[in-house]
Length: 489
Ligand code: NAD
Image (cartoon, rainbow, N blue to C red; front, side, top):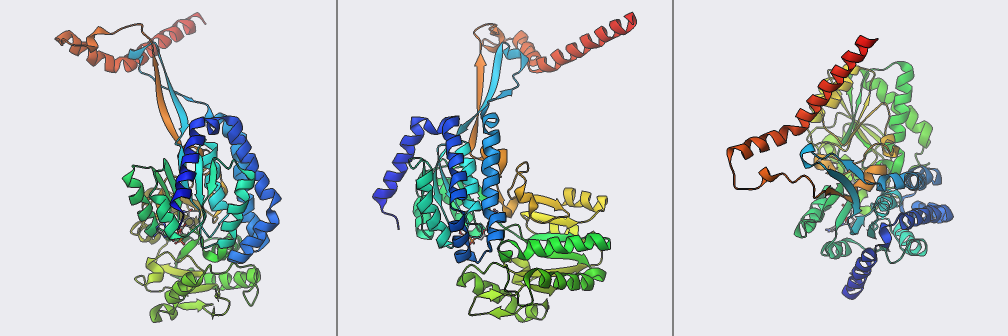
């Protein structure tokens, strides 16, 4: 638990800093983004060690999924920030002429960000980049389930960033609960739907806007492919499923949908590639299960008798090291927990269908996933996926890489969450778009005021159509002008 006095002091310091207007300047925002870059560059070894300690991540994986992600996002924001901050023009109806409309992005104020344990550096610093870019003050709550990374952030952030504007508060659900009792201007949460509901109801008390980055069951729809394309697809599936954090990833593949006739060959290809990537003893280059709770949860998923009998590869459990082998299951019961709950671990169920087009009904009849993957060159199938299913994102012919595209929004829909971030979308998520209208004292339209009469009714009727009438007249004028000049030619 946090000391109430300390919490109050933290909050009032953030309020004071925001009130000072310092965080709104381009110079301050840029200095903080540069500080984040320095923080990750100068502490690369400590980050590697912390990620190894918390999750058993290899440095290559840590660089690819954490340090590289943060560095890229900070550089992208530094490059584009000035443009993002420029107010946009807003169209104003002709009837208000002379007038000017503007949309000015303004920071919300004091923001609370919950980080996640599976990518404890990137999924904490990435939203921070968005919040700072937009000019907010921030409290970061890293996940207590990745303690080495949490203390690394708590120790280093005050050394690099403006300590009166960005605070790190460590702790578990009790501290999270205390933080949620405070009044925030925006809450950004990454985690489970269960806690997402708690966050949302706490936010509702103060009508605080929230972004919920949740999870779900992300399917792959695997169509028939050429030999070459299948080899690429299998590598991407194995790398994407067991690569980042050993399957403990919100956008990891949860299950594969494939036609019956391809299942046997697919399983053989997957087995060969798993051995090639992770070695015969599966001890190489694969992150560990985060803690005892998740280890026991995952064991329960595959030890259920009807599920255990569907294992076609792997399944061995190392109680001492709390590790579970990459495991493939063929057609586990659809009502078993492994097919109803998000797996968030090293299991890959394969569900076979008569026809790959049946995958559309399979996916659309379940909660909306954070991501849908499809390996296909069939344009009709692609169109059906895009128009007949709903998900946070759709990626054709690859896995997870959508997360690295700053030009695409990242976020869920339905049960996988709401709101979005990355690149400009993160700036927008942490900004309020303020509508500003500048009017003149000229051209006073008297019919807008009572006493009412028929003329005023007709005038107002006309005023609402003025833009269209103006446009029509403009088009007519252009047409006439065009006709007369073409006649001269
Ligand atoms: P969680 O929801 O249990 O915990 C997340 C945060 O909530 C932690 O900081 C924790 O301290 C806090 N918390 C826990 N219990 C609380 C309570 N009772 N009251 C207030 N706060 C509380 O996280 P988890 O289940 O370990 O994370 C896994 C989930 O997160 C999966 O569903 C996964 O898909 C999702 N996830 C989503 C993304 C994304 O970007 N969309 C990324 C990573 C993980």
